[in-house]
Amino acid sequence: MSSLLTALAGFGPFRVLVIGDFMLDEMVHGDASRLSPDAPVPVLTVDRIDRCGGGASNVAACLAGLGGQVHCCGVIGGDGDGSHLKRSLEQSGCEVDGLVVDPDRPTTVKRNLVGLAQHRHPQKMFRVDIESAAPVSADTSQAMQARIDALLPGVDVVCIEDYGKGVCTQQRCQAVIEAARTKGIPVFVDPANADCYERYAGATAMTPNRTEAARACASLPGSPDEPAEMASALLESLGLEAIVITLDRHGAMLLERGCEPDHIPTRQRDVYDVTGAGDMVLAAMAAARAHELSWRDAVLLANAAAGLEVETFGAHPIPLSRIAQEVLRSGDGVEGKVRSIEDLRLEVAAHRDAGHRIVLTNGCFDVIHAGHVAYLKDAAARGDTLIVGVNCDDQVTLMKGAGRPVYGLDDRMSILSELACVDYIVSFDTPTAHELIEAVHPDLYVKGGDYEPCEIVEHARLCELGIPCEVLAHRPGLGSTDIVDHVRGA
Picture (cartoon, rainbow, N blue to C red):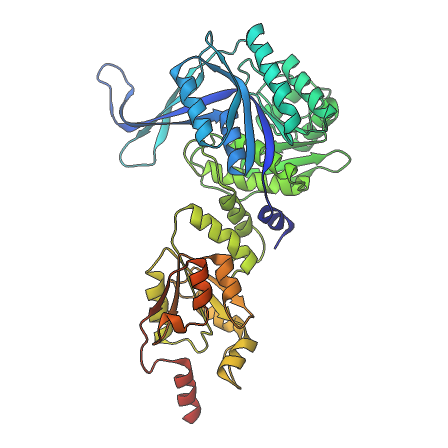
């Protein structure tokens, strides 16, 4: 298990202050299979409207999904969209005590029209922005600063999400960065697409994409345009501790102060929508550093999180368990179905978040035969995910006697891996499956045989944990011992 996976398994609560442009993302879905009779444009017949937080709102929701205790500080309008946005943030588990209502400004809304034509994948057709990019009023700015001053001492990390909507002014950013540095609190910035980044000087780290970095570097000496050169120029000119330039399908360029540039690749994706990917990168980086992960591990986590984000439509927080599962699958030694108990915990958590019913069984599975196959298919039919625990060779010998197992552990797990009904395989070296049961905590535990559930050695522990147990039908004459005795007799 890698250092990153070990760290993810130990993730706990952390406190974060998100400052920036809080928005409402609106997805208007419908059928777009016909053209308007009065203009050469498609007609969208609306089926449903989905609303969720965007911009800093999405950063906050992503951080909450990663276990953060999130305080939101920004500006919304005194309108229905602002009320909906506050409710959405609260439902995500965020605190909205830092949001200032300005009745003279609209809540920023990004309204996306999404059409489906000829039963193909839905596509964005158009976007309508409702917003004001003017700097906030003096009264609103003063109220916002008062809330920042009150919240800052109680957090572990600060995130600034700037979309250029008038909240993250030069004065605001510098005041936050200076106050945070005085208190030893790191500040992470996802910058606006702007010509100059002077307002972010002194921050801990920034996460611009390639296009944003190129625009900001155009006015710097030499006009650097390669990722490593842009990273170096921005790091030095702004006095950052680290910078991460995201490179879409090519991963990210990481540069730490005093180190060489580090290009960190990512896995190719089926990209449906890039909305929210930058927000997810900022949230993942901040969460990782709040848990003292290395900068490289923080980028690996951000790559995995952003990759999952672009595979979904719209901006949606990705749970930590799904990100951990993605990191696991992207690492070494996790191809196929065989897992360690530690790795299995991460995968089970992701399945449980997805609402999957987990079924666990265990046994020796030596000389696998038709009875085993029928029993495992029956077990798989009782849930969504089947996990099979396999006794190690020494335990099989103790249970079955000398000369057993016929097939070693690796061979037995390899054969089980070929069964379509089996999702995961894990070995264990204890006389009982208690540790495995406690780690997986399945929705159902099954065994194959012709005995009562109370005769299973794990029955008492299952009852303590409240896990139902079921014995599946036994097929007379189909047993490994019978087959081995028959072959040896022949």
